[in-house]
Structure formats: C-alpha cells, structure tokens
Length: 109
Length: 113
View 1 (tube, chains in turn orange, yellow):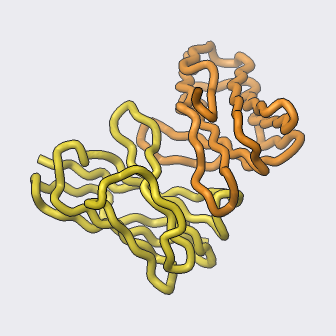
View 2: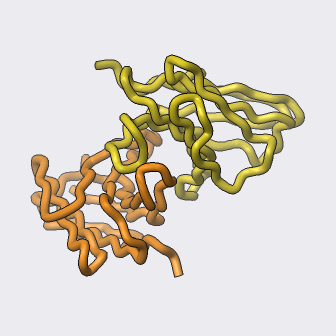
View 3: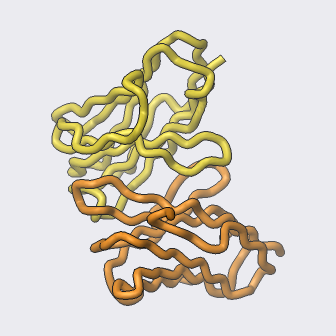
C-alpha cells in the first residue's frame, strides 16, 4: 500500500466548476505539502499546512491530522488551473518527502 | 528575493559521458534536494543536502552523486550516462528541510543520445 494516495488520478471539468482533490496518508506527519506542476515542468508550492485550513485566492486546502486526510479545493475553476496537483508528506524535517502520484486536472472552457 | 536557479536549462549528451548540473538555492536556504522526473512519471528523490552534508539519499545507483558548497549551492553529477537517464532534473531549496516550504527551480532537461 502506498503511503500517500491521491484521488482522483485524472479529473476533467468545465470552467466554473468546484474542484476537489483528495490526499490520504498512512504515516504520522507534522505537515503536508500541496504543489502544482504545469505542463512545462515547473513546480510551485501552493500550501504547506499542519492543521485546519488555508486559503489563497480561489484555492483552499484543508487537513485532518486525526483522519490522515487532506483536500485541495479550487473554486470557480479556470482553464489556467489545468495542471498536475501533487501532495507530499515529510516523514520529518530531516527525512525525504513521500510523494503522491499526482492528480491531472483539465479544465475545459 | 531571487528564486531557485538551475543551470544549464537544457543539455544533450551521449551515452557514456558524464554531466554536472548546478542548483543555486534561495539566499538563506540551507537544504537543497534533487529529483528526477521521466516522462509520465512522478518525482523520484535523488538526494538532499543540508549544510554541505548529504542528509538523505534515494534509491539511485552510485553513478548519481552530488555535493553542496559552503554557500549552499549544489551540484549533481551523473557519470557514464545511459539512455534511461534522459529526464527533467529538478532541485528544490528550503530553509531547513522537508517541513518547510519547498521552492523548486525550473529544472534541467537532459537528453542522452
């Protein structure tokens, strides 16, 4: 069993739809990362959170440490949101990140 | 504040050659990690350096090596290149390690012919 599982693997939606991407993990963690990778390859850190909820623009990330689950939401989705969204958890500050397989999101106009 | 820079951005080599890639982290960041990404694959962790010491290592053969200098700049070296080494190589820097926000460079795209 993978230590970090994301769902769905692929998601196609219409512009304006509310998007939810899920991440479940089996290891004990102190923080979780959400990152975005565009087709050109560049990776951008969206959020790092250890509890509760964070919001940046149309993006919202939540985490439930007890249930070992995090979600990334996109409100009023736009074609420019099309990218691969990845969650990653560190085993500790000194240990490598365990990466999810990524969710490929396509937003159609 | 300048972002993470990687040089070169593109590189073409032939089998058997060696290559050195460079990563300059954000000023003040002491942790630099390296990743390999092949087409359609996720990120594969190569290694992480912190204060000039390799602190973590992924499951790659010894042909892959790296180092970090006192100014936190890092290099990775691949010797005896194989066709399967063709990939996008990404580095990321952070203040102290993996519980800090990771800042990625644009990557070096290596093609081995």
